[in-house]
Every structure is written in structure tokens, then in C-alpha cells.
Amino acid sequence: GEILSEEAEETRGKIFVLGETNGEEKARCVRLGIGFAVQSAEDAESAQREGRALGVPVGIHVALDTGMNRIGMKSEKEVYNAINTIKSCKNLRLLSVFSHLADVSDEGFCARQRRRFLSLSTPFSETFPSAFLHLSATGKLGAKDYAFDGARPGLALYGYGSEGVSPCLSVTGRVVRNSYLPAGESAGYGRR
Image 1: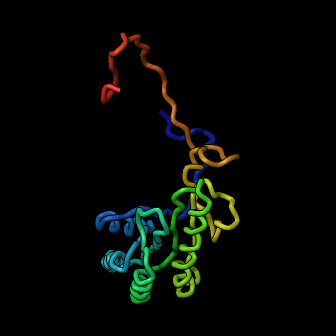
Image 2: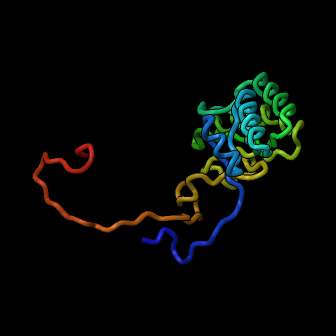
Image 3: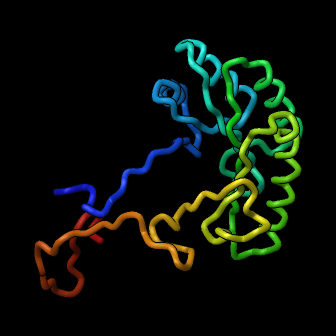
């Protein structure tokens, strides 16, 4: 079947990986010109090695952990170590500094994450003024205090969590069988 509908438009832009990447994934990103997240000075050094091996500049995005506790730098010491490393790595290009809001339903926690983001991202902004800042979650799209330099729409791309947003794709299927089963009978994977 067709993957794209007739109404689909081609989108061109920069791609970057928000999650953790291992050495093989970093190498593939460098080869394809895809930016990726770094979460430590060691991660930046690894990116530098990959770029040097191919003789190309590497676009990196610094991950800050402001409360999601998934990836990123948490301390000022980590931030300054990373800044010094990035400055010393001639083929690294710091493209952005980002974090992610953990729970948009908790305004107090969001405000604490925003303050933490400002505290940890300011040294990067002062050292690398062209770095793009983004602190995002679908539920805060359009919220002025969380806009910074841009937003990542997240689940809103699929039509969830934000009013007035249309999905960018849909998944469809057709019914292939109707079965009537006796009570207690199971069906499907995991018998669910």
C-alpha cells in the first residue's frame, strides 16, 4: 500500500536525535549529518572523535536534566566541564541546549524545571550565543514562559495533548475476522 497520502507534503529540515546514542549510532549520525544529544563532556569528546575520523563538523545538542531524570547534565560542574570540552573540540558545533518538562499538570514542578533550565543553560548561552534553547512538552505549546527559541511539538504531531492541532499521520487497518468466543477464552499475542 501507499505510505504517503496524495496530500502529504515533503518536509525538509534538520534532524536531531533527542535520546541517548551509543558509539555506532553516533557514527551513523555523523555520516548522515544528523545532530544528536550529548549529556556529558565525555559524550562531546566521543562526538569529536567521530567527526574527526570522517573529517566533518558535528552538530550537537546539549541535554540538561531539569527533573525528568532520563538524560542530561544535572550539575553546574557537568555544565562547565562540557563547555570547556566543546570549546576545545574544533569540529563540534553546539546547535542547541534542551530539556523536557516531566509533568505539565503540575505547574509548580514546571516552574522549578524552568528555573533549573535557565540556571543550567545560561552558561551555554553566554559561551555559545547562537545556541538554540528549547524546553518543551506538548502541554506547554504556546505557553509564553516556556517558548524560549522554539518548541518541540512531541505528541501534538499525532493529534494528542494540544487543542487545534491536527495529526500528521494516521494508522488504519481493516477488519479481517470477527470471532465470537466463549467466556474465559483468550485471543492474540500474550493471550490478551
